[in-house]
Length: 423
Image (cartoon, rainbow, N blue to C red; front, side):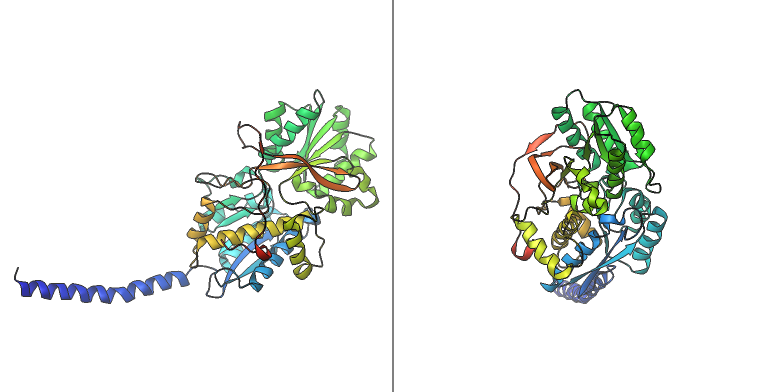
């Protein structure tokens, strides 16, 4: 080939490349503009919550706290310059309603992601829809193992410890502190109760007796009577707050004096006290667990920071365990958004959570990793004494299989300035 010809071809190739560059830039800009729920000024996310119905007591306050935290973050400039808009829709803890509201959030409101959808039976009902829409489905407010199926549901992630992890740790305590006792189980008639029982029986073997309840029927007297008739000395309870109060109230009324050991999801003392009123004395001695700072620990720096936010943006609601849950989950979401980068896509957000590495208010580490979409990996035990709920003993971690239960001794992290993460 002659030099002149080579020069002509090279010049032509260069012109073609220059012509292509604006097109590539336009394509990238167009792709960014087409991300659902994301604009230059805001990112819109959504959730389904039981603002009414059987799970409303206590749980209806979670989304108010989450929204308050986002208002706080927005006042500091948002995330990568974008304000977070959190759309909260009531499903009444009814799976049929959940499907309707989630479809509206995704198809009509075109949210960027779902955050903290609450409930095992409710959120299970929308997993297939969320999967087909490829929506980031982050930090489901439930400890079901359903959320930890990355091969089946690649965009769904848990946040709190799963019920089997919790069941193993509670059962380990019972085995150690109540040797030879007749241990029974009372649980919700869905994956919540079943996953809890699986963890309990992995440690203790078959329980002496077990009873269940459904959230549509508040008549728990016969079930509690059956546990009493079985001679149960310890009852491990996988219950939401309203049914913890009902069960323990029925037990007291029947003169059934078992030791109650309750899942963290139904054991917040402030919530139960409000439901029981002058009968709250029956909560004395209740053993439970948690994995976040306790409201009563006013020296805890996370509680101090969250209380400031609460007083400014959420003062109409009590500062209880549900509020701390909402603030803590929102904190993790902001970490995930930061990790997704200044030009977020749904894929980038999912990948950011999958990589994990987040630290925050929790007492134990997250389990997030390639192939693991489960949240916190353990809990610490609590007890109600003299009208106050407090931690005792070390935190423990385990898995939902046959892994060992081990003490977790790493000290908790302190919050950044204003409890707003920077990375």
